[in-house]
Length: 409
Image (cartoon, rainbow, N blue to C red; front, side, top):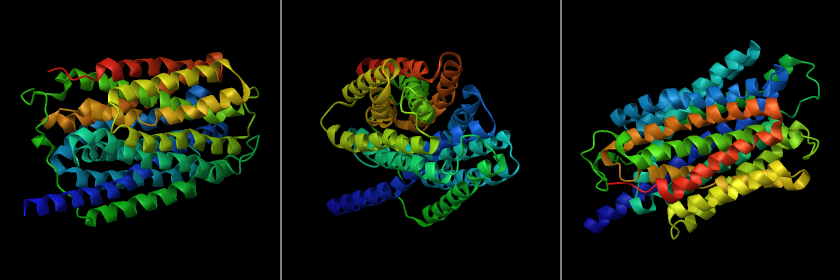
């Protein structure tokens, strides 16, 4: 009877993990559309790079504002209810793009992005730790990496779709701002419908209830707060810098590939190459999910961060095809970073896992701050030299993988 119960439990976990992959896919697709949205809104509203990066600032600032309240909410209502509410809020945010385009207001677009990101933040706070506790704690990094691979599938498809639907009608000179802005209406309205439909489906699914407060692997369950764990705090900084570097690179790719000394591509064509960046992350996560069954997570993280920093350096100090493909291949080595940092940082938190998850999702605000800083550098020194900022981010991640991720009793 015990074996039968364990088998049923594992089957339930498997079904839950399969269901959760759809969430990772959707928020990946939505997030990567920002990379297409930035050049479109930059052209329509005649923005500087710094002003255009407000798209990422408002999107990722929502993580800073919403993450801790979301962590507390999920702790009270459970993972499933948190997922449903997150889907609904994200759907409302997507729907708000329609009136934003109709009123031709950049501020309305930024508000819609904030609402949409608030829903995605709640999804992240609920789904990421849920995946880590649905099975053996020793394979949590591998399991989260696998689900993140479907997130990367969404980020791979997103720029390609956005390039066709949003940038496909772009002209070299913006002659009709209303028409250009209206190109975002139907894609985001379709996303709104899909998210609301997913909320309805998850409301009727029977998912396993997991009490993370019973995690026996806690380093010291008597501690009163997740903030007392140094590997969590250092991990939060690693998340901040990783997300900042990844988002900054993605945000500038279309403009970088349009530079005359790099590839001189039109925006709609460059958007399709952005899919190679995110596609590398997808492939790397599938490979990483298998490889990390045998390779220590910290060492794998440090190796990937080192490789990413070398590739960014090549993109900065060379031109043409070498620079182009170097920056695109960074995605391959970004692949395992988020899930690996996340799982290392919450390892052993026990009853503080929900709070720790909220802190880590709060650190995703790096996606708001770092691109804004890179925007200032791009306006001052040019798009290509501005990528040096990403190298500094990866250097810290090397440290975290080798030293900072080790829990201290």
